[in-house]
Image (cartoon, rainbow, N blue to C red; front, side, top):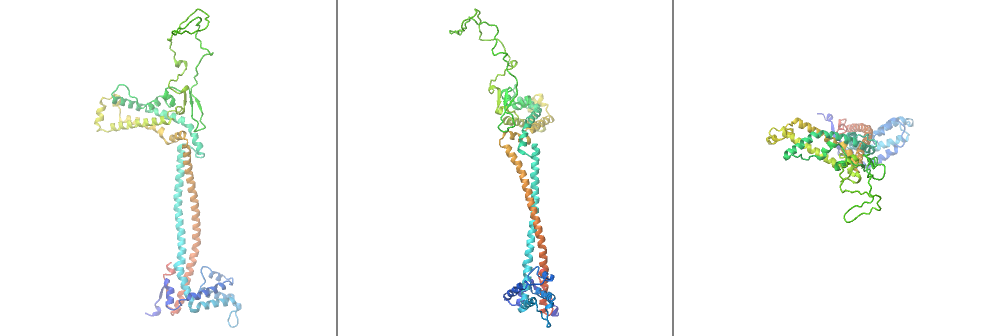
Length: 510
């Protein structure tokens, strides 16, 4: 095979070493190139306004091949300075011709071009692409965070709206709206008391069951407070405790200023007649002595001789209910309900908890009865109920289930989240502030997520702008590098009688 047709393949990274080893350039070429670069910097200060020159000077450092093109352009711009001998009198042309001659000495231009080619392929272009990749990754990460922040924002808003809907407030002025809800509590408790009345059959069944198990004729007292609410409704704790209505109720107003201090619930007054004296009838007490043993009481000068006897026991029955007088035997002084006694049994935390516990006790009893009735293999339970009253034996799964449903309805009226919140707001100094803070915190989270989303969107726009600015720079550098690689290949080819020269692993690999 003809040697002329064999291509010369040179690895891009080894190009400079290859030129030195073939003695096309000297090892100390860098010492000479500094002087050439200085001359270029001086010459470039005085250049004609030409589009071709502007294009050459953009994108990268000027190399030897650029200098050749600049001279070609100067031949046009400086043509009027050419003399009869073909020499140019222009200082610009002389400067650039001198630069080209300095480049050609010891082929330092070829070493410089090889170094530029290696640097562009191995460092400059990959570095710019890494920056673009970082910007792309940053953009991707920001988009993922935006999705996460959007989910968190939507979740916070959803939780806020759900809690506001649960509480029945608009969420504009949270604390005031929560305090205004307390006006609904009396109505809520009255409704709950009416719902509790539907558990009466279940209470009767439970009481009958306990009486049967005890073997006693007297009914055993079970679920006392629950039975009281079923029979009397949501009365004050005072009435439940002492068995009578209070004359006056004094509400505690320390927690909520919008509550009345006193509420008069009984307008009955004691009638003492039209005067301030008690009329005992036409009894003449003149000239009478009362015998209390050895001692006598002197009533003064008697006016008549009529005597009367005061008996120690009067056989007269007086009805207090008919007279309108309420006598306090064990209640608070004056029949005034204060503190927790002024609260209704469903509002008083202590009695309310007891009612809930009794409902849960009743619920547990009914569930056990359901299990026993639905379990065909429970022979022991069946044998125990043979001697039970008909009211117990005639119970079915359906009837017990119906009673259990009623108990669950009553329980739900007392333990649903809205009533729990309102109950805690009324009876806790700090709960309303805590609940308000929790609601506001959800709005704060939503606002913070929205703020973060806006920042990330700005960052994405900034990244996109930087990526766009890098793209033309990278493309221009690639084009310039391809052009430089082609010039170097052609220059080396001339040195080997036109053999084809391939610089492998260079710009084409990028």
